[in-house]
Length: 315
Image (cartoon, rainbow, N blue to C red; front, side, top):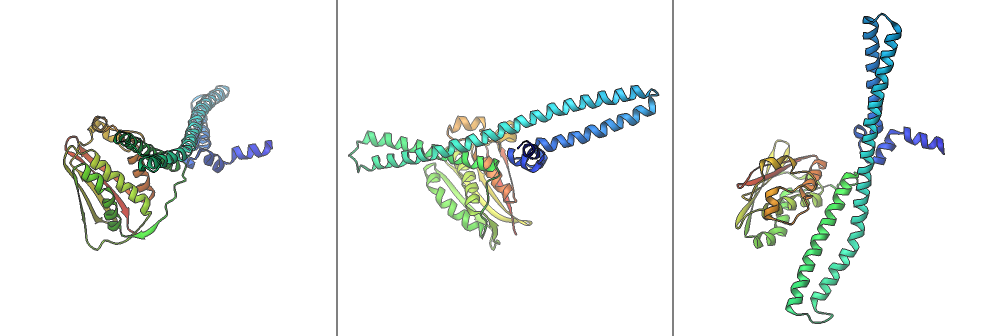
């Protein structure tokens, strides 16, 4: 048993899988790298010391002292990385478990509210219907947050496979726009879609790319003051399809732009304009696009609007 435990600790691949990290981020691999650095640093000090210091004992003492200091520093750094990796793993597991546990009661709550609103159990007054509507909207919002947290957890754990198939991206965009048209009309926003002709098919996961398009288009609609316009365009650019979502909304402050794809980040002016939102949508969108082999970015000017874009490779 003890031998097996030692073998498991020496197995770099197994240790990296435990922390759900790549080899280059794994504390055990970093320890080996630091060991190599210490060895070559010690060797260099010995060669230099032997050349300029005549007393062999002094050279040996200097080499041992340097090695000890470097080893202590390396151990402290690696242990810190190990604690961070373990904390991150536990956090991901906690989010995953809690999100799964919340899904069932939220679904039950949603169906119970809909049953009460239907009037099949007993008649409800107009005021009661109004309260039920508020409850339903909040349960839907909670369900979306739980779904986003589960997606983030799967991304971080590397358990986010893409089910790819060959499709026309313009067809997927048109279907997605139809889904968001009700929200756009309710917000007095017009959605315009332009696409180049004869674009080739690409191999993607349509459900995940649809999620990206929904995130970008709904963000554009949500952060437009009063009436506005969202322009979605699709064209071929080198060996990629290039999609752009442009709005004339509130824009993103320059100081906030470097954080825009981070988890849970929401810009200061966005919080004033729109209190809803988890700050996970753009993080998820970036992860999906990069996993699909593409790139994502944006350019924005406060009070003038934003343009988010992404590319997908033509294969």
